[in-house]
Image 1 (cartoon, rainbow, N blue to C red):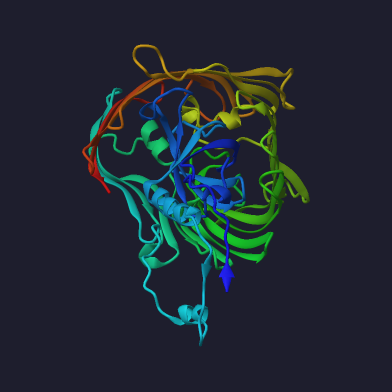
Image 2 (image 1 turned 45 degrees about the vertical axis):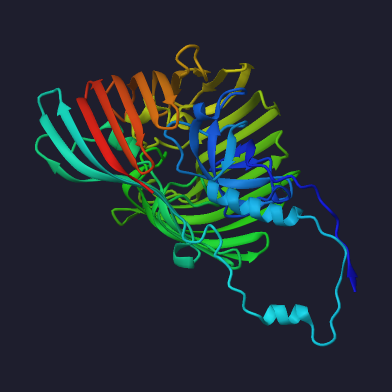
Length: 543
């Protein structure tokens, strides 16, 4: 018997891929199974301008591939850098372990084959080989354990005579895949403190609030199983517009294109529009998907949930999400929540009412420019923590009504963006103009640092104000990262008495050798309600 095979080219696969589309909680990259990519592979997401050295790239976060087509793949964003969002044109680079695995597979696939004669007189060698036990090394992702563990010392000095305090705490960042050969994975970031002494220890600082936006969860993902589970501080992947929950979910794939599940937990994230640390939520959902990544793809989720505040009934609502992607040129995202009226809180009224809706349409004719149109609606007042307005984490909630904007790279290292819209509610005598501007120079001359400036003026149902921030980031090789930010926010509204606050923040991260790191930071905050200085030092081990 004679067998023949084609002789493919001997070139190994790519190691870097480009983000061609950004969605809520994920990105699409320009590589797929034809390039050696597979589900479960991990990549680091970086941002650098053309011609810039790799060591000067800015870290955006990590991504994990969850779906693969021939020429493209979809990946979830994990461990994002604070204040930075993925964007089209960012570079995704394979981890060293997955790179070695892909190169071994690619080399074996591209190995030249020649015609040969196979002869046998008894038995079937193929069946005998199947029966024979051949020990094989486990895949590279089995038991892979990477991350960092650090211990923190924090001091807080209240400038209004409230005294000073110090705290001890810890930080944990982990990426543990296929734990002990199972399909459980532990990934995410946690930062907390376990001891507070004297003075103003209970004061919530700006740094404390930002630290509470972390996600860290234990996930079960088996490609041969129809079930998926997660526990921890997580987002529901099929309904990203819902709050981050301290709890979990269980889901089952009913069909190739249909998934259903249940979720439950509390709502701890202060950047969510309906934030309340004492809220409990329980819900069910069904998700649908259709199409292909390379052409047209649609995903939709419908569900219902009930909430309690300190275990007292609050809301019963239905939520709907839809996403439509046409190649990399057009994306449409829509989410809404519809409440059943609570007679106890609505003077006996019954029926349904729209409580929240968000729609965005983005057109990207090229990698250098994109346009978007948005519509945002709230019923009542959102309850996020307004101290975070100046950090940029709440930008998506500041504009109500219709708005439109663009992002462009007119020069190689210059990024400009703007968003304008008119806001009008029933209580306003006239509409107001909301404005948001962003200018960034990715690599300044002489000092090779990134400069980023933002200005926003908004007028919404929950209040009106402005904020301005300027940040400067410099990376010295792969071992030292320096960051400095200064900002000011003016806010007037029913949610807070504070009208003006200013802050200055500096931070340095050192990687000491292969396994150790040291982080130090300082924050000075001046406002009418909070007036303090905060310093922290973290030392730890990387593995």
